[in-house]
Image 1: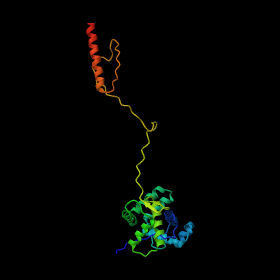
Image 2: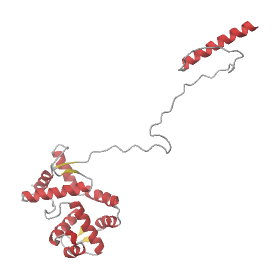
Image 3: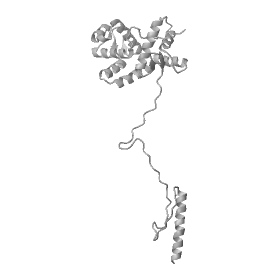
Image 4: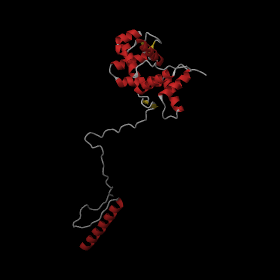
Length: 244
């Protein structure tokens, strides 16, 4: 059986794995140099144990965002771009960079393969973790597979590439939503009804008559209007004959 280089996040990492990786990238950027796990932890003590931080750094290397499979870690161009966006408070830009990078990684293509095997509708973080374990041909324990798969799905979900119901352990791809309708022009109501006016055939008879004709006819279409015009012509001709 052929194997692939597959890694899962370590279960010692915080559950909010997506935010945890953001904080690590941001802290390395603030340090401005290749930094050891201890240096990163000392700069940002909220990151917790430096040994666990080192495992997360190795996973960032696997994702292709830092140089160094082990401490020290240094941002590469991809990781630096995300870190700069995070530091400048440009969350949407950082999210788009994450999405672009993750979609190009083999983990995302394996997620697509796993979902196809499941029928394309839903799967589970445990099932995805087990799918990756088989590809890697590793004897990972159940807890490592379950917690690693969960954190990986949290990362993908946090970057809006996956929907993850943690309570039910269900994952699915985000459903496509139709784009919102553009707002109406300023000063107009949301719905504007424009009445249509039937086209009246051009005529060459006078628009006014020297006498009154009382006619009660309802004409709403060109044919009816034409009949009314012909009737008026006929009446006009009779009037002129009687006057001569």
